[in-house]
Length: 55
Image 1 (cartoon, rainbow, N blue to C red):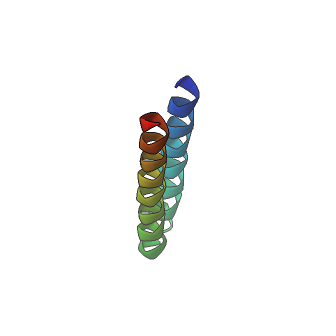
Image 2: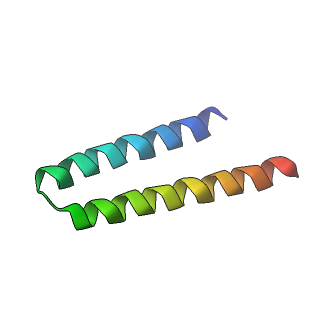
């Protein structure tokens, strides 16, 4: 469980850094892609975690 928490925290920090760079470059199109990819990744991780936990 601790490892899962660390992976999620790492993804969140990486997303924040990437968004900060893209906002600084005024590249809003890429910001949307990053946000979408991050949401998709978190949803997939949660679905996988839920399926693994139910077995």
